[in-house]
Structures are given as C-alpha cells and as structure tokens.
Length: 114
Length: 110
Image (tube, rainbow over all chains, first blue to last red; front, side, top):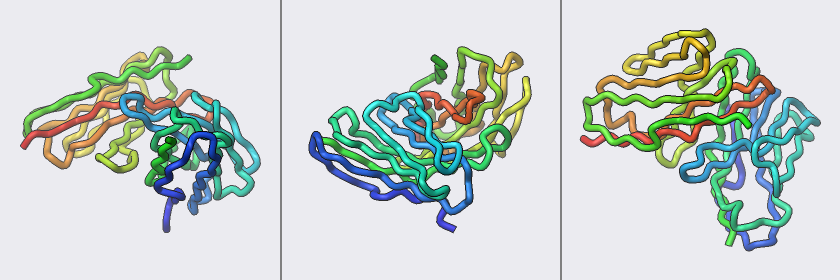
C-alpha cells in the first residue's frame, strides 16, 4: 500500500517553462489537495478537489492549474513558471474532511525555478 | 480571509523541558487537527479535536481545544530529541478544506 505518491520529487525549471506534478493515491479517497510550503509561511492551499472531475481554488491559486480526470490522480500544472513558484509542493488526500478526516501527505516535490 | 496564527514560530528547549505551541483562529472552528513534520519530511497526522474544551493525550503529548473553539494548544512533557520537528495546527473551514497554521519549529538540545 503506497498511500500518496508524488512525482517528480525534484525538478529545476527555467523561468517561463511549463511542467506538471502528478499525485497518485491508492486509498480510494474522494478529496485531494495541493499545498505549497515556503519557509515561515506554513502550508498554503493551492487547489483542491472533492471528487473525480471537480476542482476548486484554494488560498493561492494564481499561476497554477489542476485536473482530476481520474479519482486516484490529481495533477498540478505550471504553465509558465516564475521564480516565486520555487517551493516544496505537497499533495494530500482525505477520506472525509468533516469527520475523522486525517490528511495523508505525499513526500513532497521540491521545485526550483531559475 | 480566515487566518490561523500559531505561536511561537521557533522554540529551543533543553531535553527534558516542556514545550507548548498555541494556535489561534479569527473564527469559530468546526474542528482542528495537529500535524508533525520532521526535518526534510512530510506532515504526519497526530490528532483531531472536535468538542469545545476537549482534552486528549497521547503519551507525553497533550492537546486542548478552547471552550469557544477559537484556539488550541499542544503541550509536550519532558521533551526528547525525537520530538524535533515543526508542529502545525490545521483548522477545518467547513468547505472541504483545511487551512494550516504557520507552524512552530521545535529544536531539542541534548
């Protein structure tokens, strides 16, 4: 049981390049989230999904797009990377946020934009 | 918008001393969760608090939820080097998403 898997784990981009981060979960969870973590800023929610085919904006959605075509996968895209998007990105999934809705996190993807 | 203030930002303690981190919200919370992130790792769930005034214990960790459900605290008794990491609170906004506090980074000096 792999839990939540993120790929790639590390990536270096030049300003203006595009890329996609993949998050895959094997727990049949409905809810999935993308957070970014910067020093002193905690975890900030970028986008989230409450089920296959749905997406919604979080606290800091600008510059990112997401898709949830399959229940187990949640993709985060950067169309034109900027240095301000240098960060560690965490994906998380959750069975039910209203009750005992523990968030399960992936190991993170460290992105550097030069 | 909703803000989750967490204090202190950093704390250094001698091994064996106590440690407390506080989480304060600008709104009344539905529930609150606590996570621990080891250096270089990912956040790991510790506990969820739901009821007003609730107190839960996990070995040396004590979690409290305020009577007004606007604040929470995590206290560690007799810290050990294995307690090193960043502790986050995460509050449920009621719309499918959790908003995280800024975290408290704990360093334990042996």
